[in-house]
Amino acid sequence: MSFGSRGDLAAMSSVARRLRASETDDRIESSFKKTYVYKTYLKNDAITTAIKEGVVTLTGQVSEPSHRYLAQEALSSLAGRKRVDNRFGVTA
Image 1 (cartoon, rainbow, N blue to C red):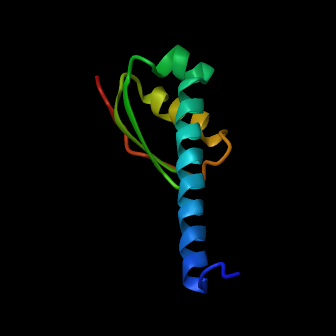
Image 2: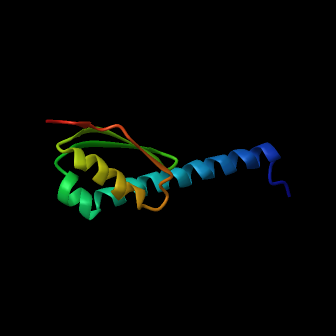
Image 3: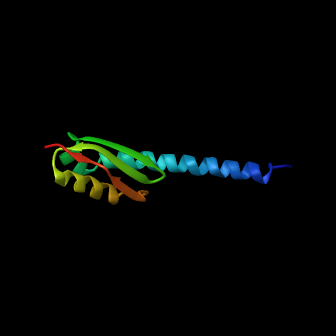
């Protein structure tokens, strides 16, 4: 019985890692939008999250400087998150 070459196994392993990373990324975004901080302070801000393999990039505009910090802190506590890159602008 043959199970394929090492190259086939490596390719399947790589696909499985990407799928797990994608599921984790989706879970991070979903969890962020369910946080008290998001629902209370950030839901009306123009926040965009881009997540790839646990690295979160925040872009958009927030209405107050403190909201930059709140978003970053809310994400920092979530499982699977590796780093948060905060690129928000602040509207006056």
